[in-house]
Image (cartoon, rainbow, N blue to C red):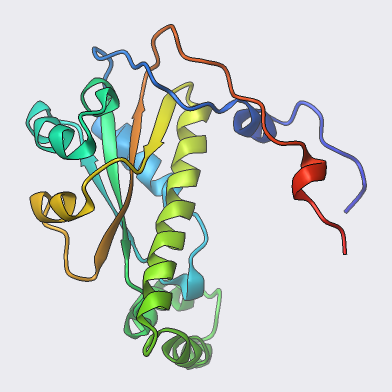
Length: 211
């Protein structure tokens, strides 16, 4: 580790160039493989105890967009973007940890004897604490969505994370399970002219403390 700051780093440039997209090209589409790859990118994001407690519903057919549009405040991105993901977080459940860790053990990354050392603390952390379970669902889904946003940007696509929707209606209309939370909508697609450049942010000095 050095004190040098990377210059012309493509990953950093992708992050710094991201902007919220308002205007999409409604004629542009994404293939099934592109959608799958975006979700694969999203699922590389960190999750507590390797829970991977997320799900992604790709709303991209005209019929599905028509179902989502009125319960998402009739936002134009729902119909104009190539796809809008319903980013779903699942309440943290420690009982799934052995199954989620099985591929990790099989790959030789961790020994099987350590699995209970992950499951037991997770049980203590979440089982009796519904708010923690929900907080973890929101955290997990947000990490996944962020990875998808930057993945899309690296392909030259725009994205729009949205919290403007009727969560109960989305839950019912798209058949979410009782332990699932619709955390956000994430539209992704080709941009058309008229979008603003990235808005300036607060100075680092205003948001950073060294202790």
